[in-house]
Image (cartoon, rainbow over all chains, first blue to last red; front, side):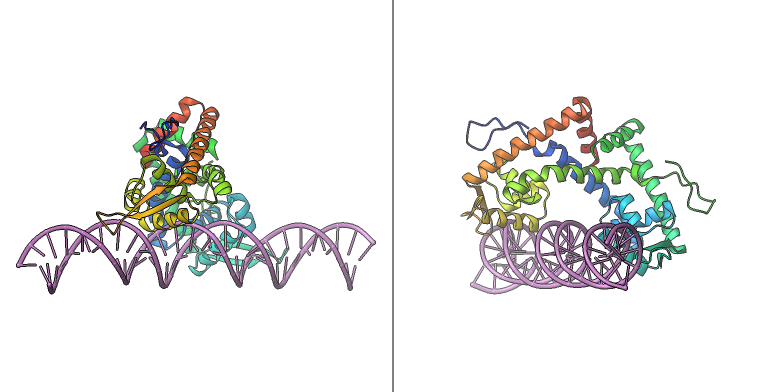
Length: 150
Length: 150
DNA sequence: CCTTGTTAGTTACAAAAGTAACTAACAACA
DNA sequence: TGTTGTTAGTTACTTTTGTAACTAACAAGG
């Protein structure tokens, strides 16, 4: 844990990357994401952004790409690509908005709604498993702390 | 926090993406990484993997790419590219190992060592600031929890 | 109408990362 | 020595992401 710089005796470098918070955050995020991504990747061939867009549509009802982009803080090009992918998977339809022909109303189709419900259940199960693993107190504490870091 | 699926009354969907742990983890990790990356990106034009490789060399003294790859859990192609970039920046040299001519001994040059020390200080400062922000207890708790999630 | 400026969304291009296949060197053993 | 298998590291190819430029539509003021 504690060691000096290779040869120079001048620096007292009591620093380990493996206990550096941004590093730990990244490792943990990657590990969790790898595990959960199986749910949308293996069964639906979805990417993370697609699952997020699908979620927002399922959660909030019809929205425009702009609204998703704003509410989910996803860049508009990522949303644009995710929408196209979801459209090709027949998970949603788009209809040009009558009051503003620049924007499109995005709606989940039946298969999209089904995927949404299935993935929500999977997410809830995942969260429950995590909670069992960490204990309810710690799981909640973790969420609070992470929220403060955003 | 609590809402039903758009119109179908059958599903009780008490689930918010914004309190889903993998999502929070990702948001927090990205936010922190964005902030700290300025340190190695703006001043040295380094990528995250390059900073990690530099760190391991500074921390453990001369190593081979394979050793870095193993000890840091970074895929060998990423290490390979990072090593080349660091070499082009004149931060390290490579010498073919005499006892195994497949592998190369990587050594930090003076500018690399300086960058290492500077970035370690920056990381320590960053960690200290985070600790002030969260409080020592919570900062430590966070690290412990993140460690359990890897 | 006709500018000027803004907005929704797409496309094109460049940067980064993952995967697989490759080269060169080693090791072990018939 | 020749064969077979393994390892260190690189390269080629593909996928994903980021950035900038673009198109079409709107809005406000002259």
